[in-house]
Amino acid sequence: MTQVQTTPPPAKTPAEASNRVTLSLYSRILARPEVGALVAAVIIFIFFLSVAPAFRSAESFFTILYQSSTIGIVAVGVGLLMIGGEFDLSAGVITITAGLVNSMLCWNYGMNLWVGALVSLLFCLFIGFLNGYLVMKTGIPSFLITLGTFFVLQGANLGVTKLVTGSVSSPDISQIDGFSSLQAIFASSFKIGPVTVWITVIWWLLFVALAAWILQRTRTGNWIFAVGGNPDSARAVGVPLVRTKIGLFMTVSFFGWFVGMHLLYRFNTLQAGNGVGNEFLYIIAAVVGGTLLTGGYGNAIGVAIGAFIFGMTSLGIVYAGWDPNWFKAFLGVMLLLAVLVNLYVKRMSTARKVG
Image (tube, rainbow, N blue to C red; front, side, top):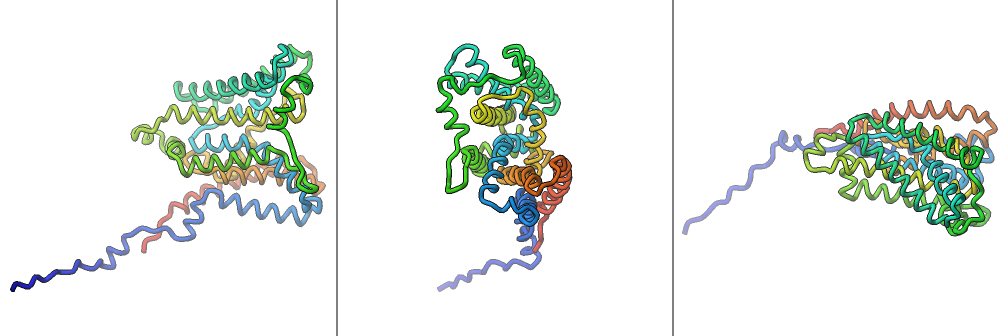
């Protein structure tokens, strides 16, 4: 009887085993774009707790959340767009445009506010589509395209409002049909004990959760990272580059419309010149939250933390009794530090450890 001997497979040599590339725990932690923003948020929170007694109450905390939400909602869309490799400098004024279209259309023509809100939404989505279409079809940088849109909307907001109303503020719409139901959706609040919670905080958290899920769990999220990281390679492997980027511009416009509805139905009227400069706050929130200016890197949770830092600082300075003019200086410092930290974090997160 013939005996068959089975030769065991050769053991891996130490050299072969060492060829496996792994990430250290430190690099895996730094791979999260929001880590730097989270550390900064904790430091700033502790700082204002120590220097501003008014900062320590629950009422102050929820006021900070509300302040953060009015910036954070649009910043979610701006962050997605920046991950996709583009900018939108019209994001600030479009919030006012949305409210003005809704209010003056209904005030002049006696329309239900729900109809005006829908028309306003379609108008804002058209602006977003136009921004994206022009960027993709002309090759002109989005910075310049949306800067042009910014000036057009800013001038139209002031010019049309003054032409229709004789002033730079929209009329009071609180007596028009549909006001109460729209206010409940966009500008209502409720009490939890002594604390007032504005519904925009709830919407903000929902939008952040949705954006985070889309980025991390869906094919659309992969497309966003791809078109921001390397557009040519993304197009080569079948990513719908034009459709994805136009969709991102329209997303920013949607969030701008949403905040515009909140402002209108909270205050009943709008100043046509407001909104200018907010586009930079959205960008700063995204950058502080770990989004790279070069695109292809970031997440929604980091953007939310960046917006929360904005809310803490803007109100913390007031609670501490300091001159509010220092707030802009703080934003500039935070932006510069965030850019440096984000580049360092990105470099460390891609470092590999052999062994």
